[in-house]
Length: 388
Image (cartoon, rainbow, N blue to C red; front, side):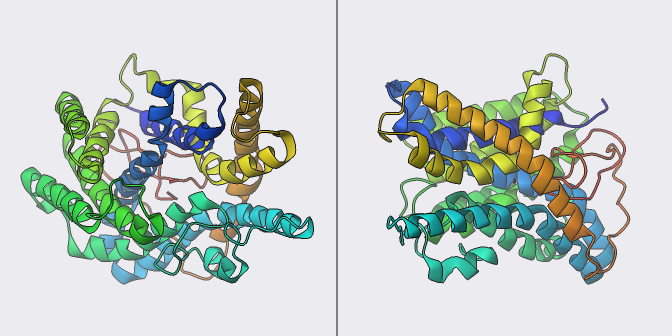
């Protein structure tokens, strides 16, 4: 089996659009109750992002940082900052422009746009316990949490070598991470509860579990039948959730098993996630994720009379707007911003790529500097980048 694990890229794109629909669901006129129930859980897509991020970061950087030690950390962090910060800063500037416009027109919204907190958002530390609610560009909370995971990742690499542990021990560590998350969120009814309080621990536990799932994929990538077992685990956890197991305990293992199943089956004949258009949605998914919330707010101000009952035609127009904006932001902001930051000479040059038997250059994310290192089946991994 050769080529990129395109299924993971496509899955990330689907997850991003689940979040888009989650944020606009309350305004869709005539939305059936069943569809409303599905879209109302769209915030869970972020949990898939965290797991996927841990998966690909471990694949691209785990062995490299283990071999280089502290000397490789600056190059790693530079790549991470290059991946997440330029587009975040651009969308945050859009939020500042919107806040200024509302203030000029005497419709200021100090709850959504608290000026005193703006420096925290610029530095992407707003979700580290410094605030009590989401603000400015709400989806950026998860990027703030991811930055925390990036800073701790080198310590994880030094503390744990998943390759040296037997598979049952790795699975036990994943289970322990999920139990820790459920315990930390014991007061919460859902994973989306009080994000300002629980968002960082939610990211760290799932990111760490994602690194372990990558280690399992490296062991089992030539055993695609294992995917059937993963699908069974995912289905069992989902049933347990439906029967009353707390969401905070049932959903993370569901997504972890699903992630491993997708990785093991990527590239197989007939896989619908190999479609080119789905793959493109995954490539631009970071732009989709960071831009849609502000675009929706601006769209309602300009084009919507009743924000509680937006007709289907207007919803379709907005979704098309997000699609176009995603492509443009990816092409003209995201990738140039990555190249710019990666060109800075503040840190030592990036390390040479580590060769992994069975992997080749590429990523589940866009070409060039990407949101995640392209995961592929044979050769090695392009260490270049990361959730979107």
